[in-house]
Image 1: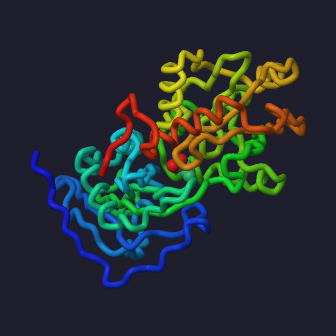
Image 2: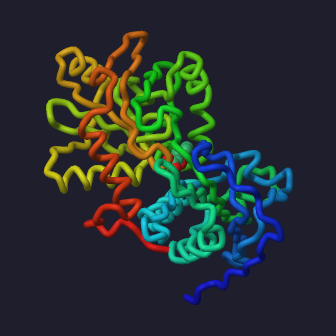
Length: 356
Ligand code: COI
């Protein structure tokens, strides 16, 4: 298959860049974006990099009514030699296609997506922040654009990549976050779209997140939608527990997102010979471990959040403090190793990083 040419139209003016130390998550965007168009029967065309600007869409476009959309999240880092590094980007693009499959959306060739991404990053290279704790967040997404109010897969789509220089996702940074265990609302059930990275999963989580915010908690922890017993994931992260020397994370069950950071952490722990198990784990088990003093650490993993230590769970108004609310040794080592590999400061024995 021949590679599609990418037309580049550069912006006439450059936006002012924020100071690296003032960066928040996802609030500013670079000068350019990538776009491609899809039409059923013709495939993808019109691959282009253009100035970042609002999209013009028909108000009847399927995305607005039935939410046919998928997205991804990745990060680019500047290494100490000034080269740009991406972390397992092919995994994200593959996952986008898996999510798309679930939502009856077209596939976007992984190699073409990586080419587009590389060219976009090269175009906006000067936007990559270099300060500790910052990176260039990459948001590829696909939306259904056919103007049609019938409930059916759209015949038209656009694939877009935008870039945003970011600081840490949580205001706590690498300090432990507090999590509210959600007993009323659920995020997803097996057979639904929980394993796909699609907008609806996040929209349905907003009410619980708002309640958690009001109570002073950073995120909610979702329980399974059937028994409200087993742990699924945390708002924007997968979750891990260290109990009695063993690391446990909920097994992928169709309603949990197959996180790329999650997968990488499991590989790292295996590499270090730290016992790690993927299995069902209930909140009851976490409470017993906390009461017996065997709950050593808990942390979340995700592209945006990286490794985020958890210092407290609130479950039905019972506060379960983890490691006296401090960052645990393993969470710290995982954070340092993962970010070290991502930024090219540490050797990458797994071949995870990709130089642009
Ligand atoms: C990511 O970790 O990149 C995500 O996509 C989570 C997002 C909802 C902030």
